Image (cartoon, rainbow, N blue to C red; front, side, top):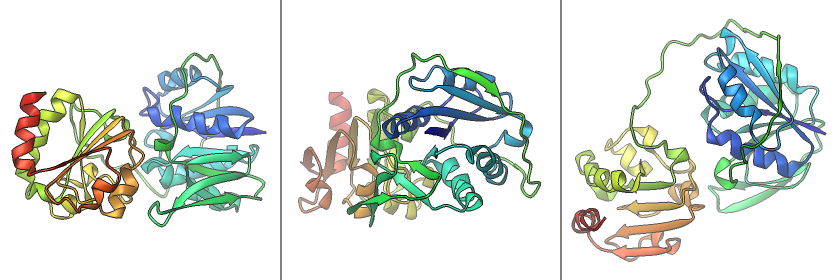
Length: 308
């Protein structure tokens, strides 16, 4: 039994999501081969070779994979994956883009967002916005899985895997990369941050999100938002935490002016410590919070920043 795991990377370094997905693959059992597909990505491949538990790193270094276009990645992964028992990817934007294509090309069912491994063919995944957990048993010859990385810890980095070049080049020729508009910030990424402070509809407007910035800087935190705040136009949607945003599990999550709609809770309830600040004592967020403060956020946030 051998697992093909597709690395999440930026051509120069592997991302923490990859290390967490390796831990999920380790729970399945068998050898783990990591595929690094990109352009001028040898540095990322060398990093992948150091991940504990990885037996081999496959490097597909070609311009066709520079931006990991779903059409090209689907062809590459399905071609390589037919010789494996499992194909695994983090359930990131990139993984969610090409993995369904892989499953379709291999004519198997994809099992999405797994949060636990029972055996080589049985997995847990959340359904109904996280209100229920389904245990899924697959009889497919090749299991195609995406991993909710928030449910797993990172693998170590004391490995020394063999690095092998892959000559296969798949360019579907039906899509091309135009541009990427990325938010630039010195704060950590939402998905990788140890501390997150998020604002909701209670912030009242986008200008008031500045009240979170001083606290975030002092805590080394990322800033997130609820869907209500995003839909109201307070902040851009790349800050959204929740079922239709980013799924996070930081060591500390501070929810400010967030009532706790089920869709938001589905995206952050696995956080190690949850702090809620809301003036409504009946807000659902208090049901899962480790610490709750019933107070007006406009009074509390300046006091909290001053105390920090």
